[in-house]
Image (tube, rainbow, N blue to C red; front, side):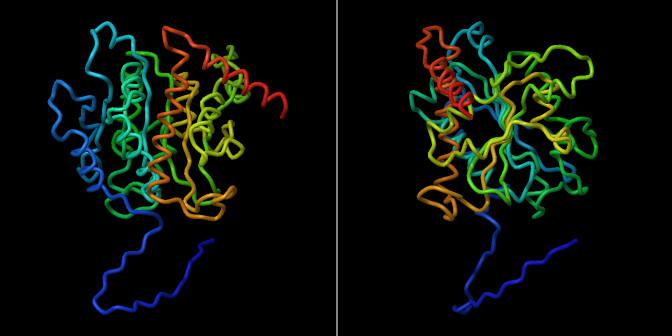
Length: 331
């Protein structure tokens, strides 16, 4: 069935310009300006953000691809860095995902000690807008041919789903080049409140792995990072996060990254288009600052998670894991 929302607005000022939007707008032009700002005034040899092109879209638009890491260090040190994939806006109407992405990009391109730590440990491959044609033409969910691109990761067509086809090839090469420890695809959610994550679990592997081989993912390992998100953000909700892959989601980027590429930390980061559902700000709409702050909170949680890989092990990672496992057992 089809549903129509009707409403009445009264415009009180002559010749006034009013814009109506489902959420805060973030256009393709906004993205271009954002990327230009990240590189402005930075000498080539000092740039941590390198911009290239993932592909040309069906309409001939450029789909940007970013590689973000520290330019400092020997080639051997750079080769040892682990990989992190971040993407957003595969669904054009979920413009709040672009604001979270902006928070992430601004943080990584900043000069904080936490940003410098992350760039010294990781290579970030970022696709900030996976569906430029949909954004430019005002679509809510699909590309110009009517396909939901987030249901095409299993077997994408180079002609009909060129952005996903190209993204999967880049991800494949990225995983061949280095250990990729996280895949995060950012979305807006039109039904649920709060900000939360969807991940996969070992039970899913056991049900769906036809070869019968042992699951390569450690039990509960995919839940540690979302637990750390609760420590860096009062907006993030662990109870709203779920770690299961329904059959309807088997062709999504998250599930393919987990099953086909073996990435344990394969998530969608979901931000409500409605706002908070509990706490002091219950029923309040998220502001642009809230959404960008969630991007920063993601990066700060990543610095906590990174203690797992630091040469001088300080026990922080294991301490968080133990606290998390206690919570799981109590549940």
